[in-house]
Image 1 (tube, helix red, strand yellow):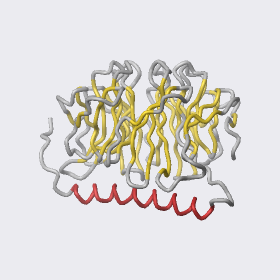
Image 2 (tube, rainbow, N blue to C red):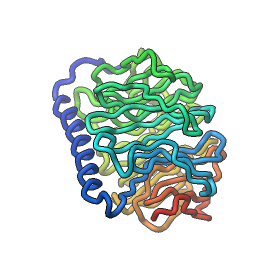
Image 3 (cartoon, one colour):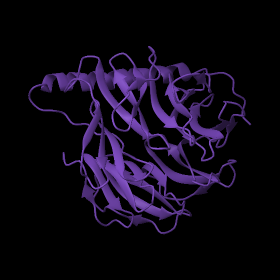
Length: 345
């Protein structure tokens, strides 16, 4: 196990992350202010299926929306003044509570971001964090009692009502996805320590027993647990540039390269039964959606039309995939019946 001590050289990285967020917020604000009253700028974020598969939540600029799985009944649950107020710039990362009664999401303001929760019918909007720091990327625990989130590039946890906030990583500079194990006992996350590259770590849900699972000279990031909790899929290579999708046991042993074709890989996601792994692959804005068997065999291109596909998620029954390509779309798991649900593009 790698010792957790020292963060020399990482101050520069933290500064870069903060500067990037400020620049993104400034660009969004300036563009939308220039276009205010002329053209409404549409930005749609990663979709999220409701646990029963009947609805899909997504963000469109400053609003959290819900649409039926067949594309009917688009409903905005929460919004700022349109197109923007000066202080509320963007919101995203909608995620359903396991019982489907609530949606947590991130709201970016000019100076910071906060985690909010709202009932699935749009009632009872609550700011759970309400601080001057930047909180984002909420993830419900499998039993719905807690929410993990990022704050100042650390992994935090809080009760579902916003109480009892705890910093679990304490300046480990995590920044490549936090994922609960299916049984809720552990959290996997990507972090940077002495070597300056990303590694996949796992820890108990209370922050104890931190273990580096990858510990290599490559960047390893975006851990995704197999639904039975026995394995973790991740990307290994150069962060957001080139790599392959790998899988390893939850202990970090038996690492296997599933793609064996270095490239840009995004949004890898296990099917609910764990038999398939979907992912986006290509060259930046020219991606296709692929599905392969859990052992890396049977790779199938579902789209054969390179676009900027992102936000890839399976329906709870494993029959469809939802994704973003300008709008929210769905496609059958065999590549048939591609449908535009939101109709903006």
